[in-house]
Length: 69
Image (cartoon, rainbow, N blue to C red):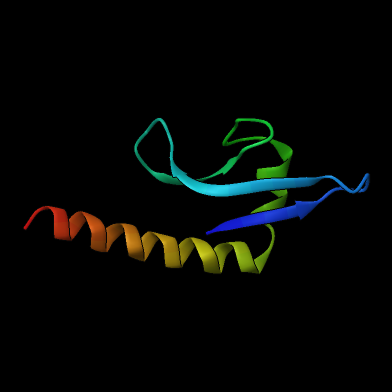
């Protein structure tokens, strides 16, 4: 599941949820190869991003729980 942001010049920026260097699920910008660029900061201001994060976090928790069985 990802987030696409349309830039003023018509370009599309792809953001996705990945594990960061601390092992936490975080939003990652494919264009900037960063967890901390302005695309990510902007996306976090959108309610849709927070809703998607909660869904992804729940999926990750289920996967981890199932892998421990």
